[in-house]
Length: 81
Ligand SMILES: [Zn+2]
Image 1 (spheres, rainbow, N blue to C red):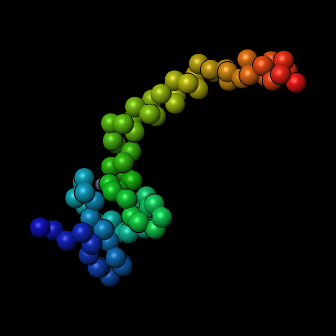
Image 2: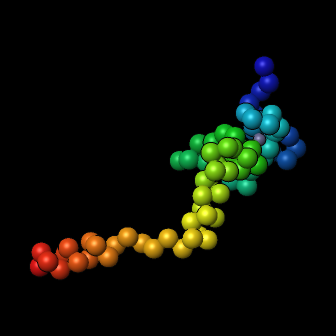
């Protein structure tokens, strides 16, 4: 079983659970949540199927210029006032 973290002359490095490579344990290579390093590394995270789908949907939404559905709410408030 490979170690999760190793110490090199450059400092502490963490093994990515997906690609298996060791990367410096900082925000440049890993996302962190409340100080806890998240897996996988940023490079692998960008390749996750869910992430790719989300990115594709974002691009689609930007191209379509979907209007913000708030007009109905505003008229409702006027009637109540
Ligand atoms: Zn990785």
